[in-house]
Image (cartoon, rainbow, N blue to C red; front, top):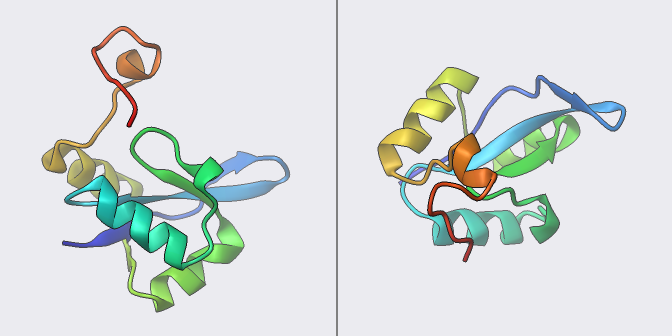
Length: 96
């Protein structure tokens, strides 16, 4: 089981953002996020959006830094990936 964080390359709201995911289950991800001051509102179906300045603290706390491609591959392999179609409500996804 691992918590993964990718490079903060996504611009929004005047800063860059990274994604925080679990490679096994959402409960592990939610517990890690809560323990490290990532707000629940940052959760987006299968990942948390985290600001660039928070990434070093998350890595120091045990998150493994990976590329965006590695993060997506791990999310798909875990079965937790939510597709764009599912996000739009057409793929049978039901949030927790």
